[in-house]
Length: 175
Image (cartoon, rainbow, N blue to C red; front, side, top):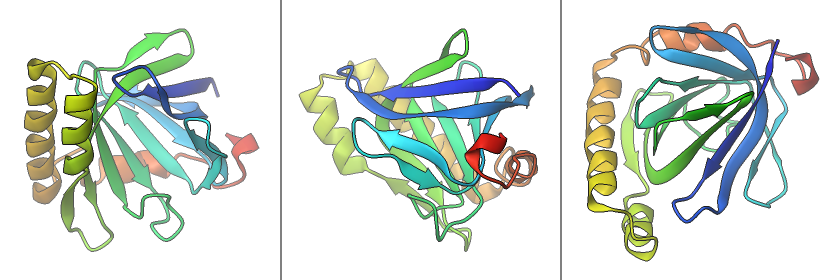
């Protein structure tokens, strides 16, 4: 499988989440990437975290990415679905990059949906001077995705879990 480097930055260009995963394939929702159990993921220059198995959806020309986690108990975030509001992904060879816009929508194992990091969004919007149209896009996208997760719309109902099932369960070297 092709290895893909995922690179998120903040609006000011500082490195945020970054890691290497396998390209699983693509469908109508976008490109699907996968990290096997133990995949090291890093936030900025912090030490890596060994993530449980996950699938990452990188949609085409959308203002979000979605992570589907196998193990809520072992996930760094504690959610089965975690959707990051971000700029549309840019591909350069085997690297996909996006700017994280702080707002997140997540679903726990009980199906409850949450809007996360509104305080961080407001703080960074002011400090990093998000243009109004960017901040508005992040808010509108988060509201729409909150509704999609609550309603069980795809890819959040079964499609994400299906792609997660394609990620080999073994150590990250196996992907």
